[in-house]
Image (cartoon, rainbow, N blue to C red; front, top):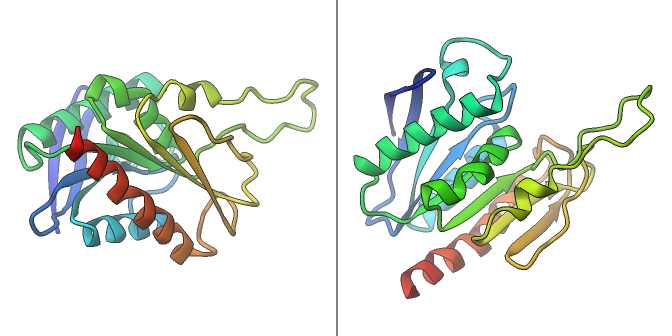
Length: 210
């Protein structure tokens, strides 16, 4: 594993590279709002991907690299992510099909930028489907289903059965796998890994056939 510091329009980002032997694709994963790339579910997905012949880059957004815990606005997150992905695929990951992904906030960024960046598939860990309703609120919190529905390539959502952000529905090209646990997805990491292990080779193979 080695780390790269990469320039973005909003400061330095960091990518932790985990190369596979003779890789057939590359998975780039972003972190959640308040956590980093060391989150257990991100690690489980990354280790599984490398074992399936897919190189992995774990991306730290500039606000995390700068030591801030509060996330940047969505447009800044998307712009920084786009800059990192473009540099990775111009360099270390050149020539490999791109699978986008992330946990929670990082999954939203991956969904919003998937088409622009040419992702062949999207992996969402603990997608924050519908924020928990505040006690004083009269109307339900708006869902983020539109971000998922906008993705036109194969998508896997791994979601905890007790996630307070709810359970997104499956779709025509969207598989939703429910695992024990809450938004942290720490309860059954073997189930998280198994979901990725079953899905990832199929989307890589589909890309190879195309």
